[in-house]
Image (cartoon, rainbow, N blue to C red; front, side, top):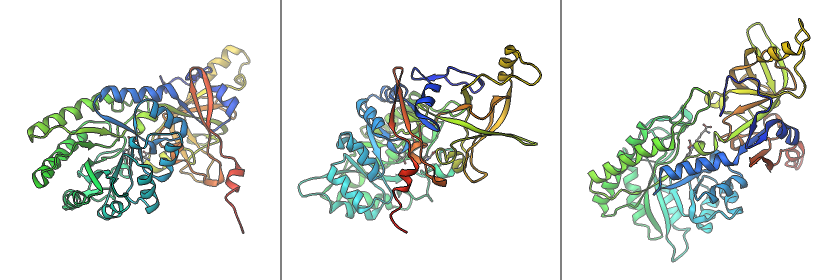
Length: 442
Ligand code: LLP
């Protein structure tokens, strides 16, 4: 439960651990992930889609701990790089439950995927078909999906809309490339075409685009049957389910998503005389996003003529999303390291407490060298917010750790996992020495 209006919560905790305890043990900035919450979101998707394959999109947030929770919850894994595959394999993630994506997989990545025996490789372009076919050892058949473009625009920002013509992913249905690709894959004895894939975009909060996508995709299944006499058994609809970042937002519930998609799938398949293909979905953000928060320490408070800036010890290096996509966040004060300073006009403790509850709209900024380094606008914070205070920013479990940079040569924050009242470090802080280690000459 997160309240943007609760501005003074000294004992705020997550996973049964007080946030201030995490700050004392692990420092700031720090990413915190609530294991039970993340696992609960895995189960919500599995419950909503009983017959389907739920593949967590690793790009949202992957480390060895998260990979181990995903495998234990019985989910599959969508990876899009050799690095993500390596993390998954390092904890023994079963290769047959891995789906390998990418619009520009390197020869090395394709080889690694084939050698590891990943369950599905998603072919993105025509050239990849022959390139992959020759890598598969004699006597084996690699299961593949073809990523196609349903030409549907959905998603919170242009940079994350991947379902339309005119963006780089997939094979165009409209141009005929998708049909050419189907014929070519069917002609490759070392490849087994199990279905088609599409991914519309990210942070989608309505079911309409998914329903349209299901219909368009199933029509392609009918076309493949009519042209080649082949009934494809699987349909991968990608991810994109939206979450709430601010209190007023809803996100898209797994159940609402499932109801709409499964109904459309049954209806359209029956209408075309096809068995409904087995569904695969690839939620990333909806599983890890709400399970994470970031802890920062306030370094400076500046009151200008027009605004109050609260500057913290992190910023666009640990959360590039506001500057990349105009993403919005909220934050709250989670504790005091000391008692509130007495207000100037009174020294009584009653007035001290009251002063901390008066809120002021602040702009939360980072410590990086550009004006766009804003974490959140219009954050209600106590009027006496000051250096040393600790703030928590909500819903930072997806596309934060995974998109963090070392801009201005700052090390990336650690990841602290909380569960059952205990906190443990699962990814350590990146130190200046780590950054220096890559410097090998002059
Ligand atoms: N499947 C495929 C093929 C994808 O490309 C993606 C995300 C997903 C699944 C998972 O999407 P999700 O359920 O997490 O929305 N960095 C951006 C998001 C980029 C998403 C890229 N692909 C952000 O921070 O908003």
